Length: 103
Image 1 (cartoon, rainbow, N blue to C red):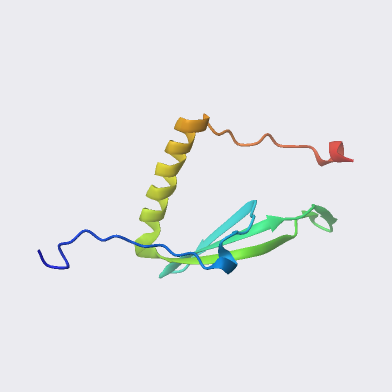
Image 2: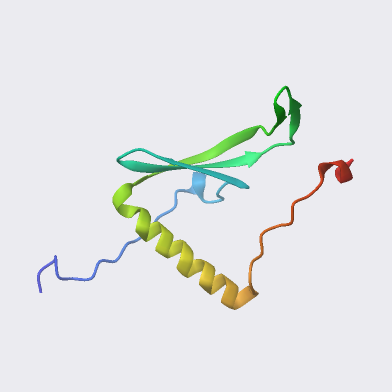
C-alpha cells in the first residue's frame, strides 16, 4: 500500500494561547473568487444613529477558507448540528426581542 492509498489521520493540536477559544454571537460571511472569509464578532448594544439603529460589532476572529473547502465546512456543520439535536433536542432561532423592555 502506497502512502497515497493510506487513510489520512489529522492530529489537531491547539496551542495553549487559543485553547480557551473566543465568544462570538454574530457571523459575517463574505467571499472573493478564491476564498470565503468568516468574521466572528461580538455585537454590542444597539445605538440610535441618523439612519436608524447602529449595532457596533467587534470582530474577535477572522477565518479564511479556500473555496474548495467550503462544502466540507458545510457538511461538518450539518453533521454536528444533527448530532447536537439528537442529543439535546431541536434548536430554534431566538424570538425577536424588544430592547425597550430591557430598560
